[in-house]
Length: 258
Image 1 (cartoon, rainbow, N blue to C red):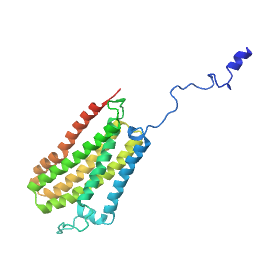
Image 2: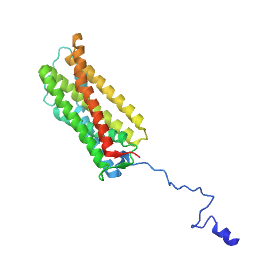
Image 3: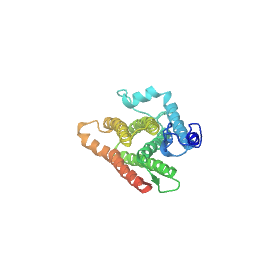
Image 4: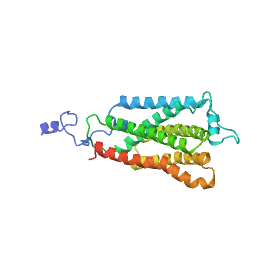
């Protein structure tokens, strides 16, 4: 009887005790952001995004008030002219596209890979995330080339220049907002449905501003409303729908959900 009591003693290391609840699943932990399985890769990605965001802020910092007034509150009768050191120059647009591609890929990866149980490729999830980055980069560049081609055919040079500066400013704003969104949905425990709602609200806000500027620049007359609808749907809404289908196919091709 004494031996049985010693065997069941609370202080013996080789026994199971009724006093301590048995938990076979261990301690609850927090998943690595973006499911990249490595803090080093997640930190490097965040560092690159912050460098790009800092570059955009520094480019617009000195002339932000002037740029904001020129984009949304232009002086009556004043025409846009090329500046010596334009904050909204072509290189600024490229940096914004690079940041927007990375942050959009982060949001897409968080949304599509939330319930993924198995990756088909041994390099995954790095390969999947890199594929999303390339898809978004190709999407923004192709959309930019298409809009430049259409504008070159139908509109005057001065209107095109005004539109390019406004579009670049909205690219910068969208990239910075998507950076904030990507950090929120990646590090905080939001469901895929909530991520989708946040993304739709952000995209709707940016597209509404773009629609307003497109109307003011190209279609300020009432009879141009129909042309505005065709123009906006062709260059903004249709590419988004096509990209949605491409991402859906890419997700189904690359992952297996258990």
